[in-house]
Image 1 (cartoon, rainbow, N blue to C red):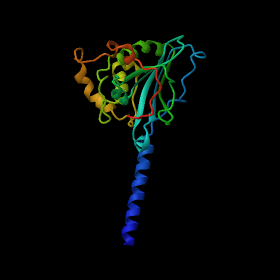
Image 2: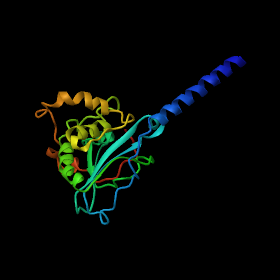
Image 3: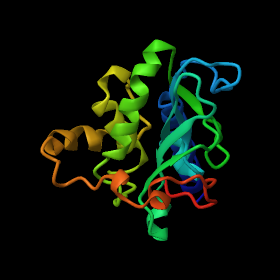
Image 4: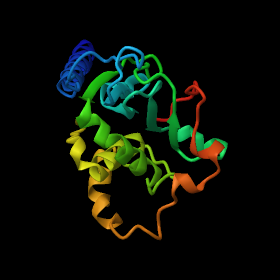
Amino acid sequence: MRKFFMLTFATIAIGALVLTSLSWALKPQSVGPAEAPAPDDHTDAVVQVYGADVWGMRGRFAIHTWVVTKAANADSYRKYQVIGWRLRRGLPVVSISSDRPDGDWFGSPPVLLLDKRGSDAQQLVDAIHEAALSYPYSNEYVMYPGPNSNSFTAWIALEVPQLNLELPAKAIGKSWMMETYPLLQNRTDQAVRVSELPTELAVSNSSTSALNSD
């Protein structure tokens, strides 16, 4: 019996070590401080992509990602993300808001994955907005394999290749979009444009709910 417990303990310990090592290996690389410059202090255009661990143990292996933009001389940011629980409220999953661009995701601090400023960013602002409005899965959400929040960010990256955005391995759902994207090239009649929905459904200025579906 003693040998059994020792073997069980050793197996658990090795498993925990492997999981910890894998978690560290998957940790996204930051390109700088996870801070969005204040519009009052930085009048140039800004485009940033953030990622933060999802809630609970899943956060060891998965992140939630979002995109923020600020046009030149704008006094606020636009924050683009997909939030799964919005479906339960009869809303499209795409959220376009003026919420804090670099805020935590359910207590998880963000990591800055991409940072463009000035003229390089200005030419991307409208293209990102258009890509978000044309997301073809605004009324669908599947945690795994997708479409989910990372599928949405991957969609923007594919629609706006000038971003040169490569999402990290923890962005579960990006691969689903990369595999699905070629099938969407004839999507004109399929896509449900967020812009065609009532304004109150297409744009959410409310704070993120205490529920976490990513």
